Length: 359
Image (cartoon, rainbow, N blue to C red; front, side):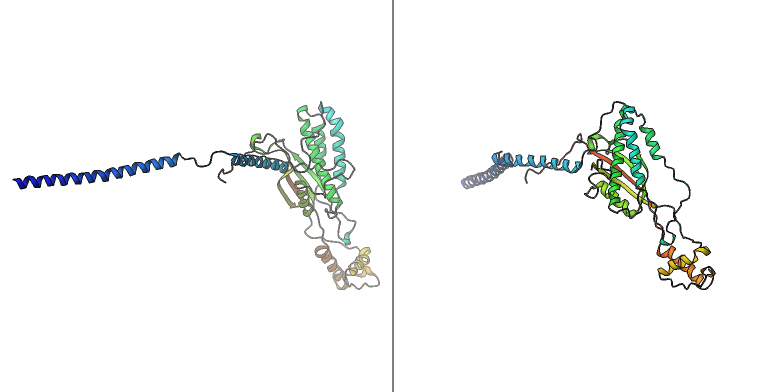
């Protein structure tokens, strides 16, 4: 019995020691977990960056200056190097005053300038002096239509009419300068029509639009190369077309012109040329062909040349080859330009993406 009590005391003592060890381990682990939680919480409370100082203030100031400069540079680029499309107009109190003081003579002078650009396309040497006649007659209604619209417009439309005149003057001066530089190839330029729409924002609304524009559709006849150069000069003026006009008046304003489309199409032209040579013309035509290396032997009487045989047939073949292969008729093409005469919209809300503060 005594031994059982002693053993029981030993078991109880051993169990107590074991429980004590377990409690110590659990307490140590719990304490470690709490300390780790406190450490994590402390790190989360630490700020991500240093407190604002003189250095960060200077960095913020630099960012502000760069932002302001970027807007200034953007505005300068948008406005371009020329004058504003919407400034410099004369004030008119009535439609009659506008017509008598500005539109009437302005349209007549513009028509004279454009008429002076029209040239008869040069014909091949063999038919020099002749003129190619297209089927149907041209209906020149553009200028009379503008005269009617500008005769007495409502006061609220006077500025719109002044804008039209400004576009036509800019177009006339640009064409005159290009022709003076020989860009028309001797074929000139013929203005067929200009259609104007309302002056409005180019985007859906004024706040979202960096530009206000007057849409114009310009129809003319010229060489394809001239149309390409004209389009380039309207959108990106150079020293080739800027400056005083040919008549000594005001030159190009250089206001922004936004290009939307340019297209060209072939106009009516002969698929082949037939030239009837009369007896009286046989000698002269044969000599012209010989100057081009035809080698035609003329009889004592050139009228005896038979177009179906011998030297006469040789003459016919030489003329046909010259007119339809070597020295063909070249005619201008019909060109359509869709552009906008534009002015920078100062009410546009420019938005710049925020810079990363960690950079």
